[in-house]
Structure formats: structure tokens, C-alpha cells
Length: 51
Image (cartoon, rainbow, N blue to C red):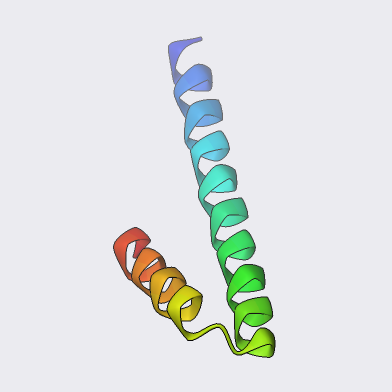
């Protein structure tokens, strides 16, 4: 039972990280489309931080 919970937690963590990454990529696309250089730099730094 413990192993199942651990596996579920890892899957949830991976899904959460993937969703954050997708959201960042979308926000970066919008920032680039709008020419918002400050936001672009901030989002790029956040992407580097998350790895």
C-alpha cells in the first residue's frame, strides 16, 4: 500500500511540474507577442530556476 501511495505522489508531482512548465511556456509566448521585455526576462529566469 505504501508503494502505491509513493507512486501516486510521484505521478502527481510530475504532472504538477509539467503543468507549471506548460503555463510558463504559454505566458512566455504571450509576453513575446506583446513585446514585454521585462516579463520575458522574469519568465525566462523562472524557467531556469525550475530547471
